[in-house]
Image 1 (cartoon, rainbow, N blue to C red):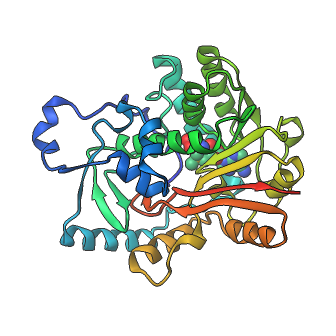
Image 2: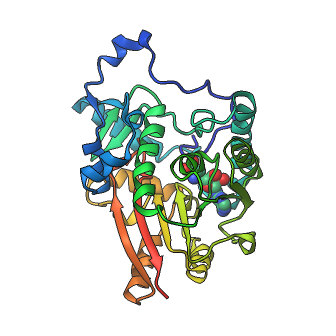
Length: 337
Ligand SMILES: C[S@@+](CC[C@H](N)C(=O)[O-])C[C@H]1O[C@@H](n2cnc3c(N)ncnc32)[C@H](O)[C@@H]1O
């Protein structure tokens, strides 16, 4: 299966919080994500996190840890996934797949209107996730999406606040732009993606919320970059999007070094942050490599930092992820010359 890209299928039902009728099932979830947990994942003071999070960000984020037997079974499942022939590699040939997946979301937005629920990407569907070196079971696929949003709210408020404009590269369904608009009502937002259906969704979000532009951009070639308004006051963000570039991030990095934005914020799977000697990590790292996810980006940034050309403000694994890998490592940096 295509673990981290949209599948072309009939639109998912509108995601909903677990309903009352599921109470007997919900009783198994004996833990809840708190502001303290989020502070721990991001390595930030809990006071700062609590100040930013809204009550609804954490509401119903219930989970339980897998038993030892379940953990063993999941590790095996993750290993089996590595030999799965349908596991697809990232690359230029994936563009049509993204286009089709986001067309499904566009159809849903046309039908249901713009909301955090209607723009939820289809790949948020797992009920088993990774958290702090363990597998956890959650009520449904909306848990990952909602924790993703909570993490983004804290990250954006820490690093994006104050930018004159925010440009999201590989913005997909615009879910993060919707959150950014909610957080920064007056800041112009730009969402870029190589899938034209993404720009159509962004147009709908703009019609509903205002001051959000879509732009077609191929991050592999940087075709379309000449029209991008990235200046010294711009914050550039990517969420699970650089992952798609494998080791072909050179043109994008050269663009950013040249444009000199005030800050670049990435929430991505970062191969360098796994411990290859740890079984739980090594199976994720193998998955990462098999999918041809982002490789060498942090190493390159560190080399640029040693050469005095960039400043790295954060490079941190949060320990949160899907069952197969952790797409929630935080890298924050800025060009210095
Ligand atoms: C996993 S999705 C993440 C979407 C969005 N950032 C989010 O967090 O919901 C990856 C996105 O990267 C886009 N993408 C993949 N390769 C790309 C490329 N070469 N240029 C531009 N966008 C690309 C896909 O179309 C998709 O929207």
